[in-house]
Amino acid sequence: MPCPSAIVLVTGATGIQGGGVVRELLIKAKSVNPPTPLTIRAFVRDPTSASAQSLVALDPETVQLFQGDFDDLEALTAASQGATATFVNVSPVFTDLEAESRHGHNILKTSLAAGVKHIIYSAVNRADNHEALKNIQPGSWIDSYYKSKGSIVSSLKAPPFPTPSNYTYTLLLPATFLSNYLPPHQLIMYPDLSAENPSVTTALDPALVASHLDPDDIGRFAASAILAPPSEFAEKWANKTIPLASINLTLQEAFEALTRSVSNRKVVTVNYLSTEEAQKQAPTNLWIASHLFLNDNPNIVDLEKVKTYGVPLGGVDEFFAKNRGRVEKALGL
Image: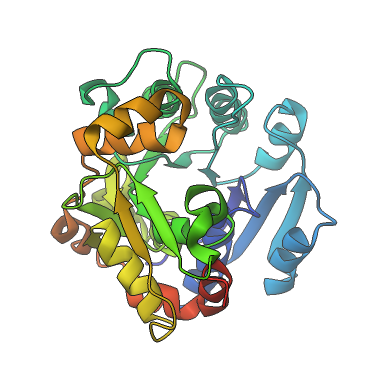
């Protein structure tokens, strides 16, 4: 028996993850016969923006826009009323290190108070066990990043506020986004890709392998959990923690895939800093500090276990092919 119906609040709906959840919910709901009755409440800051309007254009009868921000408890409460599920996706705020945790808890609290029985939270791989991570400087941005997500995870699993009966959660722990190599994130993380002779300077170990995923995989997993038939939901999705990735790559392999998608019209040179030079730069360079952290804490997901969920996964070549325009922009072509 399919899921009878769903009213889903999607927070961060105009972002990479939230937008993917909206699209995949629409696809999933229509893939069963008869289609699952679905209402999507897209929570956005500016409903007049092009990105918000593009969500409505996907299916005007299904997608509704709710305006507000994550500190607006009244708006969050209104968007949560009558919903059957909430997708939680909050991001760090560089000028307010407490904001991410506060925002996540605001969404959890208002959704549960409104009677939402299923919460899906997309955090980051290892957020559920961040205490085991090595060589984190107390009080650093990385320390704050994992503690913020970890605090939301703890409250997701054992809410410290009133909770409806039969409450369940699904915790998604995505690894490295392939979209990090494309604008807009690439402009910050790898700004020299668009140079005539593109290059990247990194403190990552050349042999370091990291698990990667197409961000749309998050949407596919979230939609599968939200719209699962009751028996499948109880077995596969209810109160489950799911690390997510589809492929393992070194940094060199990632950039080879990027340039391969445009027939190697440009080739990226990866320059590796010595440990001594990296340690010298780390105190004033967040990205170098994060690379040293990753060397000590490889971001690896059990790919075979991910496949057991039976959810289609994107591939690296497929991802860059479908985003060819952004690849060309990243490389200055």
